[in-house]
Length: 369
Image 1 (tube, rainbow, N blue to C red):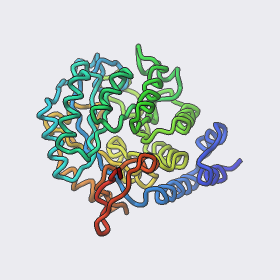
Image 2 (cartoon, one colour; image 1 turned 45 degrees about the horizontal axis):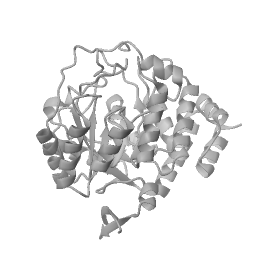
Image 3 (cartoon, rainbow, N blue to C red; image 1 turned 30 degrees about the horizontal axis):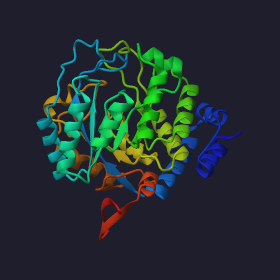
Image 4 (cartoon, rainbow, N blue to C red; image 1 turned 180 degrees about the vertical axis):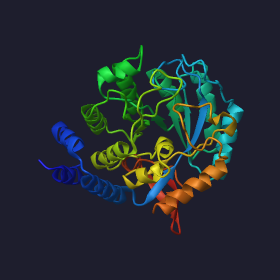
């Protein structure tokens, strides 16, 4: 068995066995890594071309009832400066985003019981009333089937819920009082309801082995999420894991490339966390198969308070400054921003969405009735 042969199999068949993926991770050389990234890039170009989709991120609450031991907004962190954005605050962020060309808004927050189904429905409908053709992505953690369904029926389009790790023992060691099975059930429920669903995991967690990362790869291959958000583990100073070593750019970009080869159609963010551990981390993520970035639309007054990990970049940039900066970086890396909802290509085809262009600019994904 040779690493290059496994990469070729992944490129041609978009699949590999547990043993093959583990062998690849255990034996990947710098030369092999270059080849892996090349093949992931080729796959991305065949599916999405050189386009990068931008999502406007709105971090609307840092209050969380969960106590995940790696997270800076965990329930027991008494140092966290808590906040909630009002409906008016959120709408102001959305309006700024619209002026800057965003067609998708990601409403992300801790698991905050204040944001009941009724409050979330009010927020979703208020955004859709103003911008009916734009997409809303939610990232609110674990909720009931009924809750997810109500928010979907109110107009939410997508839901991000990282599975965090596909190894049960590792999951339970990181999430006190949480259920590995319930997390997966939530993901299945979201897909059944009709959301475009995002799973994902962290790279470089304490006690994480290559076999655990292979479990993650095989889980996302089987589940087939429309999106997959991964990023390096970065320790936070006010958590039990503050002294642990963080994940690396190298391993994270390796995993991005493998996900792209396993799931050619997936929407794959190059995360802020990558940019936080390397000055050109996001660009390297895009070159390894990533095709989504999520600049921050949150008010600058709360950005530092939404502190999941230490060293987060862009907390002081105004939304327009952030938008201009990231587009410049994307262009410099050889890609271009596409001003659309940026749906998963397979989902768009299945659901009757088609590209509408003007000149060489794609304006929108429109559903043909």
